[in-house]
Length: 427
Ligand SMILES: C[S@@+](CC[C@H](N)C(=O)[O-])C[C@H]1O[C@@H](n2cnc3c(N)ncnc32)[C@H](O)[C@@H]1O
Image 1 (tube, protein in one colour):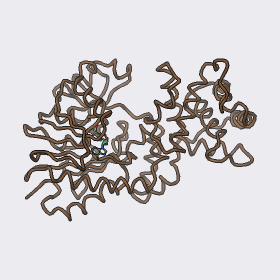
Image 2 (image 1 turned 180 degrees about the vertical axis):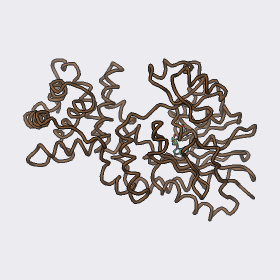
Image 3 (image 1 turned 120 degrees about the vertical axis):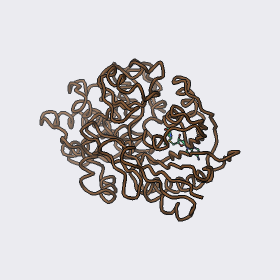
Image 4 (image 1 turned 180 degrees about the horizontal axis):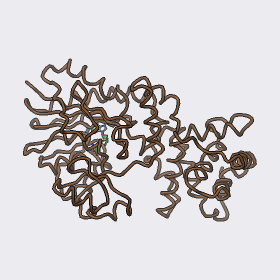
């Protein structure tokens, strides 16, 4: 049984302890970083400590192969991947090399995590690396398995672009309730706009303190994530947002004039969707149900299926996906997506539109879904996306769908990886 700690830990240690738990949750148990946060940080009462624990773990996950290479360069016998000493060293090095923490503080705040264990080893390896003035490579390395998968799918240059994207803090994009406010809000928020209704925020205070947030004039949404709903245009008809929570696309559809039904299987995520509707003053009929089972009373003019996926396209913001997404998970997701796509198709009226989207960089969850679907549903055809529906620098594929990749819009700060295909029910 673990001995109770008798005296309070030195300041800073609880946040590192929570970071260690987060790394264990992601790397050993395959949990998503965000999903593990509540449990890992439950002893942290201050919001800053919780944010620090998250930032420590995220930085380690972003640079894991390079941090491990440094550790291996300073140990005589390779530490096992899951050794506590390795994770503690990863945290200390991430602080010293990425977060400007002075080395003495970086090491003194992690040593208590290996009390009664390999304290000397951790201290020795860290000291050696600091004395050698070790540094991380300018271009981060991707985990081997991810590099192999993405090289196969997208070619070598994409790997370089993805690696560059890991090094930089991704920009914050917002979608506006009223497109007419684009220029004014872009200026007020010190940002720039890449499409009507989009602003890429400039430097400034945290999101909730920015102009227009509390009043609900905008919500955070990467420009790539805004494309699926944009491709349905504005409408006076009925829209079904399947897999809707937390609701970024529901808000876009409602703002574009659609009468929106938003469905999701997760009650807690729908709670966030409800809050988002309340803040923005936008309305949607909210339904908690399994899309594979639910049946509407009547078909819809447009259906948006933003399907659950591996989320590898959002690795810049969620670097845990680089380490916990494996071929088996991708295959399971692809199977679920194809079942959801078939269901979604049933709820589109003849002449109506269906948009299928995933925030994944795995072709199995994007391109490879389309031909089998079209082969099984002769009443659907791709409705090609046009150049003027996309930001400059993003092009529709010759098959008519949109594939966004790391490196696109790079000079403006990049964009998430998405697949989006718009189809029309022709019969
Ligand atoms: C990619 S997220 C959706 C993001 C959302 N469209 C947005 O823009 O904020 C996928 C969603 O699918 C939901 N989901 C997963 N399986 C589902 C199912 N069988 N039926 C309905 N929703 C499901 C998840 O709860 C999750 O909220």
